[in-house]
Image (cartoon, rainbow, N blue to C red; front, side, top):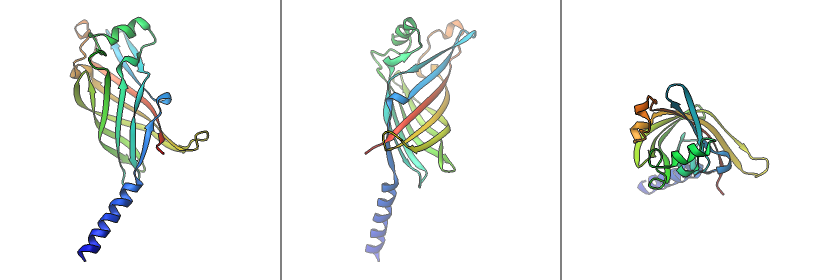
Length: 189
């Protein structure tokens, strides 16, 4: 009886592991963007042009993982002088902290689709919890690549000063940052 129970547990574990699928972030279709206050009179918007990572989804068990790396030097406000300033020690300090990461703790589903990710953002060497809300999620067979691709739109709001990004707060800038991430990921071979 013990052998049968052990075999059953082993088979159940392999079925569960087999239903988890890994997807590689598609860097040409994934751009974390943000909106930050400019002295209360306007908002500066920017994005990061280089992102990599993986997503693992087990839709049957309604679980998964998310592991994202953003090249901090790829910051792009659409204004080169601002990009250069954002890369220096006043802001993103890309020489000392070249990578921004986001790692999931849990993925929560609503129905059959991921709806929330509780994870940790690491920025300027500081790691804090940040929740992503997923308002759109869809997987399709990619017509040209002949592989499954999944896409999502996720948003979050966080306080940049929690991470030590305090530039211009004394000038009346709000520390609140709104994050929006368009992401597409291809099923791994």
